[in-house]
Image (cartoon, one colour):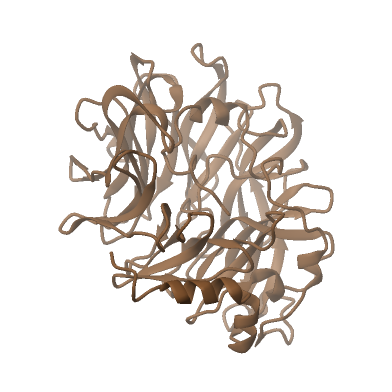
Length: 500
C-alpha cells in the first residue's frame, strides 16, 4: 500500500504539532447528546468482560446487553475474575438486570447476544477438571427466555461458546479425549472448533495442515465461520502469539475449512467476519517481529491493510459494507491512531491527545473506541461520525459525579447505542449504556432539551475520577484461569487486544 496520498512527512509534523482538540474546535460537528445508564451488578463490585474483545457482540441491536457481573459470594477458585467474586452471566433489557445462572457451578459469562435475545457463553457445572484442577467450564446457550442449555464437549472436559448468529447457530471450541500438551488454552486435550445448532447438534469443523486444534470465533447469518487453527504441532517463539504451533486464521463454509494464510509470519488470527463472508484479522510479517491488519475474501484472497508508516497495525471490526476499523502505527512506532479503512484507503481518525484505537463500527459508519489523552495513560471513550472529527464521549453525557468513563472496552449497535466501561470513585468497574437523544430514544427519559448540540468543552463526568486505565485496574487485569488458559498463547484475538 502507498501512503503518500494519506500522510506526508509534513502533514505528520503538523498533526503532531497541533492538538486534536484545537482542530475539533475549528471544525465543530454536532452530535446527539446521550443518556447514561449504569447496568449494575448482582451486589458485587464489578462487571467483568474477561475473555471478551471489542468484536464480541455484547450489545444487541435492540439495546439488550450481556456479559458477566459480580455477585456478593467469594469464589475460592478465583476463576477468571481478578477480584475473586463469583461472576454470573446476565441479560440487561430496558432497565432490568437478569441473572442467567450457571450449570450448577460457581461462574458463568455471556459473550454474544443476537437479536432474539439468545446468548452464547460459558458456565461452570460444579465438577472438577482433573487436568486443570478447576470447576469444569462448558459451552452454553441461553434461550430468549433465559433458560440455560449445556452444549457439551467432544468427550473431553472443557468447552466454550463464543458467538451466535440470528438463526441460533453457535460456534466455539470443545475438547475431545485425545491428550494434547500444546492444546489451545493449554486444556490438556485437543481443542476443536465447533458449529452447533438445535437440529444437528455439535459439528467438528476440522483443522488445518497437520495441526490438532482450532477455535471458531465468529459465525455470520449464512452459517459461515471464521477463527484460527494450528497448522502443525511444533512450537514457535514469537512476540505476538507466544510459544505455540504455527497458527493461521481460517474460513469455514459448507463443510470445508479454508486456510486464510498469513502475511509471511507464523502467527495470524481473525478478529471479525461480516455477512458477506469477509474476514479481517492480524498477522505477523516475515520474521515475526511486526504485525499488520489484513482483510480476506474467498475471491480476492488476503490484503495487507498496512499502517501509517510504522511497524504495527491492528484490525478490530468491520461492518457489512466492508468498512474496517482498528489502529495503526506512525513512523517510529511510538504513536498510533485509530483508522477507518474504506474503498482501499486508510484514513487517520485522529486522537484526543496522544494515541487512539477504534473498537467498533456500525452500519451507519459511526465508530467508537478509546484514546489516551495524556502522558499518564488516561483513557477516554470516543465517537467518530459524519466525517469527524473525533469527540470525547464524556462531553456528550450529563454530569455523573463519581463516574469516570474510561473506554477500555466500547461497543455500539446500529441504533447508535453505545456500551462502555467506566470506573466508580471507589474503584469498582461497571458497564454503562449510552442511548442517544434522537427520534428513536426521546421517550427513554432524561433527554429533555438535550436532543442535539455542539460538542461540549467539559463535563463533570469526565473529570470526577480521572483514573488511568492501567494493568492494576480491575477491568483489564487477568484472572487466575484467564492467565492459565492464555499463558504462552495470545494470538486468539482477545489475548492480544490493546485498548490504548
